Length: 244
Image 1 (cartoon, rainbow, N blue to C red):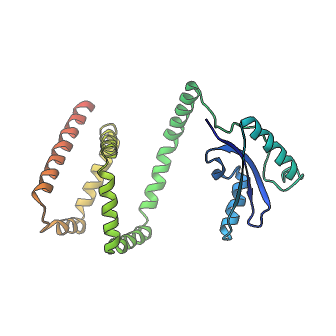
Image 2 (cartoon, rainbow, N blue to C red):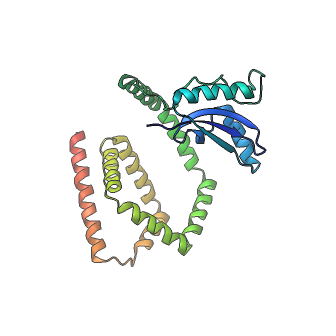
Image 3 (tube, rainbow, N blue to C red):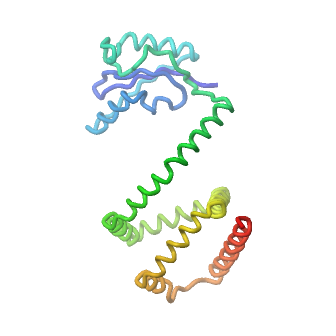
């Protein structure tokens, strides 16, 4: 059963600027775009947004109370008061929209079409960003500084171990990577070309060789690497046969 309420968002001095209704954590979304701009201004000046909740017995009561409060304080858009609300209230479902299966399918197809059109443009823009030498230098220096800190290294190591010790996460990542590699020949071709370019660079090649020279691995680590390479090779051959 949903717990319905009406909430008022206020300036640090107590003046209200938005009235809304909702359930669960709806008030944390800070109303409409108009109200969100006010919230951003308050935060930029170091202020804190006030939130007052009024519990209601049911959704109908919440609608009615919202209408009364909006009417009492008035709206800025129609010059009747001080609120950022753009309606008189009581005109939306507190529990959220419930989409039919047909509507969900239509939205999914529309999203896929939109992504197919904009994907290449976005990738080109991202490549330009990642090929910026100054940006790459700054990121490299920041990463080196972070990883030279023993506390940071220890913390990241613990986080990675904790995440990868979760079987659900491990299986999800494994399936996602296999699917991305097997179903995207363009990606495989791009990755192959990228690795060839990198290894053609003598500086990069020497850097990698130097980092691995004298690296001591336990027998357990060697076994895991060997098994992982065998699995990757088997999956690659399987995917190659499927695509032929």
